[in-house]
Length: 398
Image (cartoon, rainbow, N blue to C red; front, side, top):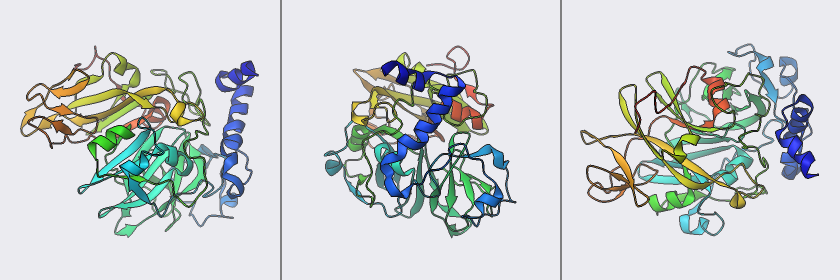
């Protein structure tokens, strides 16, 4: 049985890939219950089929319909959270492991954490943080955590899941126009709002304890979502194995990196640069320059993978990593590790992975987070094939 499971998970031959597709599409979601119906995981989209449940104008599109496939669940079969509730960090500590990954979003003096253990069952949270309406999104298949402003041309949108994938990435839709949106780019690809791009909000992926220490008065998305789900369980067990193959990806995989390697992206002035997580074992801090912007990549080992074992709390540890502009108050900072702390050389202040100075002369200051995020390499490169990959011997190192 163990040998058979190993073949099912890792073997790249067509029969075993087909079995993986079926397993992820059906077994992964069996706990969801009567909200889901059985569908064919490799069904292609056709306007005739879609018009039975969609008012989307499929004649307006920037992609071919045969690029889009059913991921298994139907429209809203993976239900977005539309009325999110929040608890204090101390209350969340009763059920959230300190090492579990959360999406940290801060705006206008408020901060909220969205645990991946909840997001992987819903993929979208429609929320408002202060005066900012946001859509917090997570695609487990691409390991892509992206947050967008929900305002478009004076109209407020809220989002749901289509049940469809393109390049293995979540295809969302807005309920106001039923336009389809690519989660990875925040771009409308089919329907009335074709070509519109959502504004991405800077965020960080960190361990819960990092968020709690950085924002002691912050809020955490509650498990009281109105749905009964296996929060804390991972329905994609073993998916992030470095030797695994992406789910429902027809494109050839970029050979420069393993498909399932995590990468941190930084996008500035038309330049996309990737920092593979394999670098962080030897280089937990990286100083770089992207489009004339001095960059620091801060990483720390110890955050749990959300896509490893069946229980996230029992999963292996990986790095968290975020990128920031090193300029502060007219000077360019340099950083180093001292006794496990990230410290700037100019003042000796201590910094965390949220870009906050916690102690020292710069306490209370915060570095500007740079556009980008953490993804699987195959996903980023499928949508951004011209990206540069950071090499210490090719670009300015640390």
